Image (cartoon, one colour):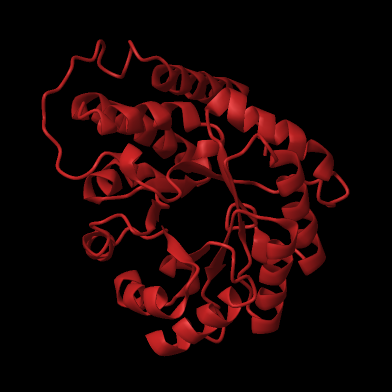
Length: 304
């Protein structure tokens, strides 16, 4: 099938227009944005003690020979910090295709992100989940040895834990290999098929995992997310939302930050949205969210 050059040119122009619209404070979708006096409940995000703000879910760079390309990680760090204003990363997760990599590749990537992110990044969170408990424990131990700022664990998705006690036991065993490292539960039921609400696990994780620091919540179930937020009224743990196109809704419900793939290239716009929300300027925050959604809708349509 031949490439439609005119259609491709139009798509590129549309993409550029949408990106520029979201990057410009004074030109958002429908023109100049006025201040909004809507009062928002809850605490300011700046008062949170735990991991907060934007966290880029990193992609895994590859060479043409299908080898991981460690040589570009340093440039990647500089790009995130200098161009997108993002100072925290989530390595070897879904975006990075961590479960498709070998254990050795995952370790090499974690080591390189820690080395290149030193004194530049605030947090390097490494996903250490695996289908095998021994492999997950080994990755957790390695992460602790190289000095990561946190580990995250996804629930096994082939032979699944059918109740919360079994899942808690798995998470507890992995966390025990890195007792001094902040632990985050990676909740993503659309991919794992685990239908145990995150809220049902919070009390158990708080009681059984001393290093528990929060949840990466990658689900559109805002009822479950809201119930998690209700248990976090004192901000004792991080609630990191993982559905980028719904971030503003999650902020209104108590999210302390966000982990997502689009913060690799849309971090600047999302930072402005979060700053507006924190200042109580909901109108500006809403218009940025709408702009971001329009762009993401366009991107998703290209893959169909």
